Amino acid sequence: MQFRRGAAFILLAHLSLLPVTTIACGDPAAPVDEYDWIDVLLEEEALVKAGLANRSFRQFDPSRDGDPRKAIVIDFHGGLAMWAEFAEDGRATDEWEVSEDSYWIQRAAGRYDIYRLNFSRPRVRRTLPEECEDCIDVSGLAILVRDYGNAARINFILVDADGNLPLPFPVFHSWTRFEEDETVQ
Image (tube, rainbow, N blue to C red; front, side, top):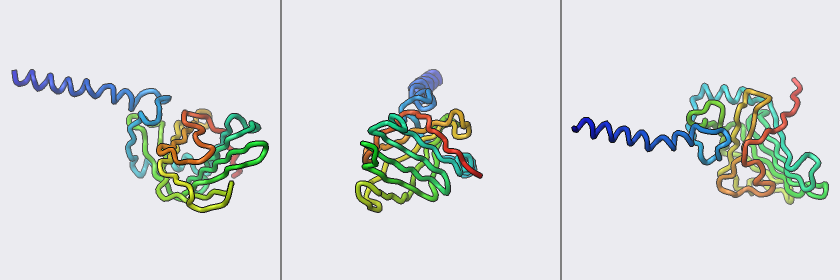
């Protein structure tokens, strides 16, 4: 009798975990806050960083020639940098960038194609509407990348978890195909 109660408890405990596991490991289109994030080993981090090194990606909303237009560039030349611009009437009105030589990586639990790129101590610089250093709170900023090794399928999400970022955010809060820049080697 004691064995049956223990087995029933274990079965119920496992069944209660099923929805959480399904959400964390499920559909790659799932909202960002539904992933469970785990730290990766140094070897996996080095592999992901090597796969992104010396690459640059850009995206415009609604388009390159749109007016008004939001633009994001994610750059992996010498670390991690993100540049953001909002343009209206053919000229930029807001422009800023966040960069860091070293960044840390997490992986979505149960997934080997979704990574979260985190800034530790980023440098923040705004050029428009007026110049300033470290005047933008970027806490909560992260970049998610899916299929980083597949040029035809790589996608990004930009996370502003604390809602602190100025224009042009929010921009790409769902999986978005960024255009990869040609790299001259």
